[in-house]
Amino acid sequence: MNKKGFTMLELLAVIIILSILMTIGYMAVSQYLGQAYDATYSDFEENIEAGAANYLIEHTGSIPNEGESIVIDVSKLICDGYVKELQDPMRDGQTCDLNSYVIVKRGSNTNFNMAVDYEACLKCSNYESSACSNSISGLKRLTKDADCEVK
Image (cartoon, rainbow, N blue to C red; front, top):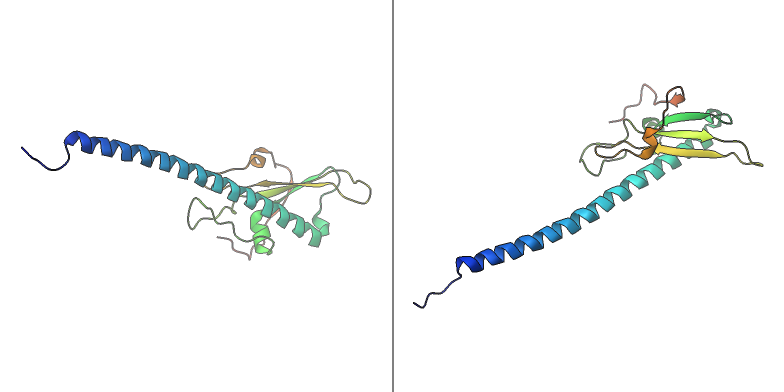
């Protein structure tokens, strides 16, 4: 009668405890991954807004008139060297730059400064920024040159 080993009930209890611990660990890791993805997309938006600002500094003829807006495709900013390709963090080998753009709005001049606002529309596999809901129909659009290839 002196049997050594675990009973079925003891093994079941260990499996349940391990399952609970794994579930808690998975939820914590997925929360941190979600925050990391959001931070990456936010950085992408800031980068393409800065790229658009730098583009307009060197191409002042493209700055919209007071009260007007233009759209600059991210593919143009990449081709002209103002932004690096935006690798989608959720999908290896894919980029976020093919359908992304920046809306440049110019308000009225204040003293010696121009009031220029930049809104990045970033479109990735599972992400789309809030600026993408703004209508861009009828706005002048700056696109990449025909001899430039973006993946």
